[in-house]
Length: 267
Image (cartoon, rainbow, N blue to C red; front, side):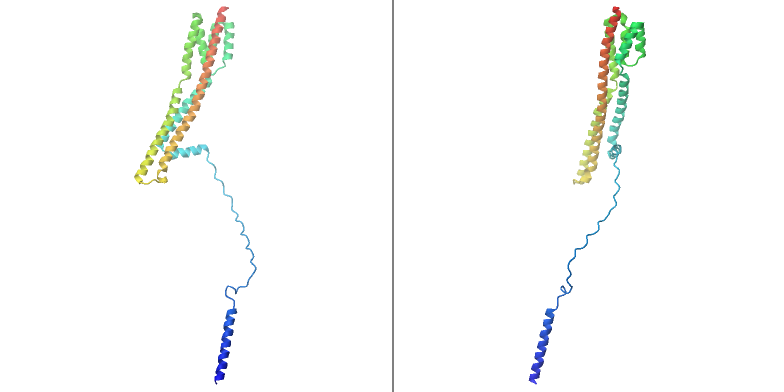
């Protein structure tokens, strides 16, 4: 009986040992999956996106209009008035000065021909029918030919000053708007900065979104004021150069007229 019990215990021990050995040889769950050579995953297909339509670029006129609206009307309106009135005066002066420009050589030739053919009266009729400051000076000088050459020279010089003052008429207003437009812009800048600091003081904190509005108004008024001044300054300088050219023509033509009258009386 004892031998039988020993045999049973031996068989049970062998069975248990074989069982544990089998568990030890079983693959773990991680190893249970069959090993397959790794194949690189195919690259994802490129996503084709439709090209977005480009936004049309705003024109210079549209940009200026938007910026003008964004600015404060209280300060932008005076600057705009300076531009409108200044342009009106400048354009009128440009047109007038271009119409006042005459071909002095041609006019001198016609006056000399009239003096030789019909006398002083014919020359006066010619110059009176002609337009421009040079023709007006010739008319005044010819009308005083009987009083001597010195009187002709004095009348030409005196009436030349009158014609020059007519040419310069309106330029003082252009110069006023050239100086006034930037000053209004700078005034708007100062007011805008004061408003921005008032907002900072009221909020007790410096926030970009809080002060951006006041600073933007300040900068826009300055920009528009400078643009107005630049445009009017270009037209003003053009008018000044045109006046200088006409005055030079008047002086040269006056000297030639006096010489013609001296030669006419010497005959």
